[in-house]
Length: 116
Image (cartoon, rainbow, N blue to C red; front, side, top):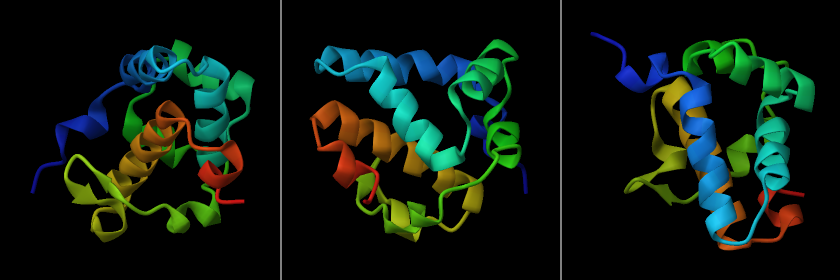
């Protein structure tokens, strides 16, 4: 079975879409960075490095310093699929990230987004 093509997509190519989505709804790049760093354990410098190096999503998650254990608390629907029911672990991590960015754009409180 072949991998989904999204796995080979550079994080740098989707990141601007995340930022634009948040900014359209009066939210900031800093908020997007905060939720991505919370999820993956990257700090701001490491996040910028993976963007600059055009690291693909598979490598982005494989090399993440620490995947937040509270990510399992992320629930809901993204792209018509419940994130908690996604079987492929990498696809689930990608959809967790999508969901967090959606919550930022919707104006959900940061403490709630970070499952605090």
